[in-house]
Length: 116
Length: 239
Ligand code: SF4
Ligand code: SF4
Ligand code: FES
Image 1 (tube, helix red, strand yellow):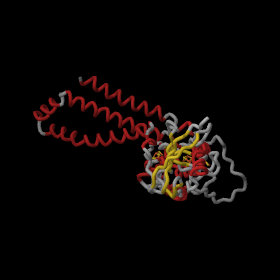
Image 2 (cartoon, helix red, strand yellow; image 1 turned 135 degrees about the horizontal axis):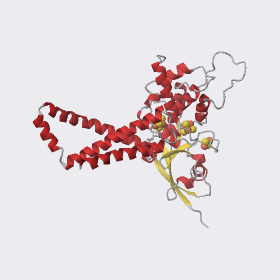
Image 3 (cartoon, chains in turn yellow, orange; image 1 turned 60 degrees about the horizontal axis):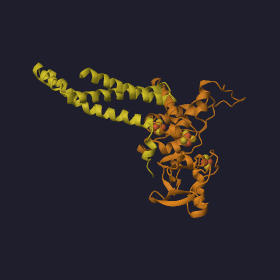
Image 4 (spheres, chains in turn yellow, brown; image 1 turned 90 degrees about the vertical axis):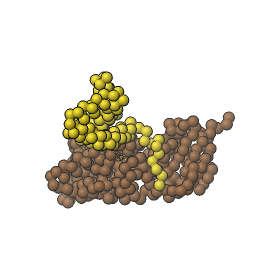
């Protein structure tokens, strides 16, 4: 049985699906870190304070920006699927992909502007 | 004047095999099927491939051309050749019988499993069924009815590659046209058949099928329709 060739996958809808999936996986991997940070709050104000100070580090801020872009991309990808499956969108699909990519990038950049 | 030559590599063998290089004279308006036929008639009569109508009706000539599944009788070499080179392989996701011929049995077997045949409603018809062309059902059925069963969508679908039981875009598209056929009486069985694990809900909406279908059908949209009908039936307790 021949496998699907990679050249056949090079189209916008496939890339959109990949971004949706990969952003989902990365967000899931981030969850333990997120809960760990919340746990600091339970352990007392001082611990949380020192942790929050650490997050002011530009590198951490950059990582947070990536996280926001991931979240926005995953959200936009999810909305795209909902539109496709429940609203029966067809030809407007490509526009939807472009819009969701644009929206997630814009959100991420807004965040970047805010933190620095 | 010497002929311009196309460099053609063709899959020879079965599931195990290799690409073999041929040189074929380029012609105006030449199709990929013309190229394969030239090789078989002039260079190597043992080459196995399928075709019948040569005009995009029978759906038997699909192959993988430069990585992408296509109907070869309606694919012009000019549109797909890269620097006068073409690579021709059998369709993906299907067992290869020999050279460019795949075993389409699982593909058509899945049409049967998806209850893809018309089931007349029980009351014998006394008159022609009148189905207004503008009705919602009629338009939904019309949108998917021109399928020629070529398997291009099936060979392009990642979910078929992941799950050999997945019914696939063509069979589900067929089921959707019947779900919308007001003369049909088989929908409760059909919905059960397409709503299982290997049915419509397995589709990830990658849309490779819709992009590659040579008849410009949109199986993704048909499958989305099945998902909605199946979800509604589940809520009503009918599934
Ligand atoms: S939309 Fe569904 S059926 Fe079509 S290629 Fe993607 S997963 Fe397969
Ligand atoms: S839906 Fe399109 S690609 Fe799939 S078998 Fe039918 S005609 Fe071929
Ligand atoms: S030979 Fe019939 S569709 Fe190509």
